[in-house]
Image 1 (cartoon, one colour):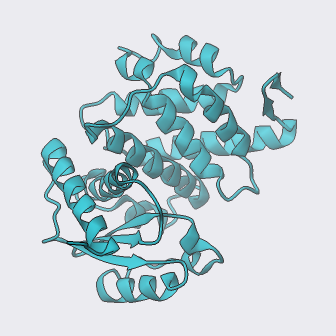
Image 2 (image 1 turned 30 degrees about the vertical axis):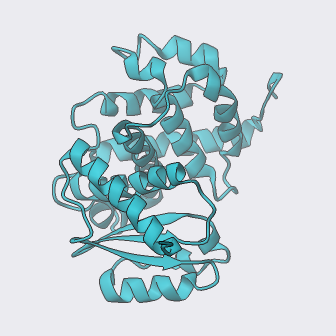
Length: 277
């Protein structure tokens, strides 16, 4: 018997929920999670209806920007219930959808657990903290995408293993994307963190000092701030509850990222196959 596209995606999401629950002891199921399906054509209406009904405090101006609903496959929400907004017209494999759903569930888990019952974004990213709020928002946006990728990789029993050498070209491409005028710049920084922290060499290392020279030699990027960010995140990820964060960590991450942006702009740094230009 044929089932609809939406029902098929719900089956994959159910498997991802069970997988995540078993690995992280997290109560997530269709009993406490609401779903909505969209396409780029109806995304604006679906999003607004979804938020009006379940997540009235979740709306933000970005969703009204042109092309917004073509930029993601799924998006997670937290309120009185959990929520996942799913793009139903993408031709992804079941394996890729499973990975996407683990990523979104990881977002939900981190929002609920990262500062012990409160929501970091609501507590720190909406209110001035005596420091440029742009620093906090930058640091948190980079972290939340990186940790969702890393956690999804950790809990996925079918996730492949990769080594520094196999991701070095991607890392250099992401580094080139870090720029003031690039809207994907923060995402690029998140991916650098996630890719490197998920490699076999880094995950097996007993300390950052034991692996940093190998990372530098393999990746080849001569930017000390990149390695400072990687060390900062490594020390968080090395803890048992690696998803827990604090304001100082996020501020440090945001400050170093903005320093990278400034240095690259001043020095016009571009990475090519032949090295730094």
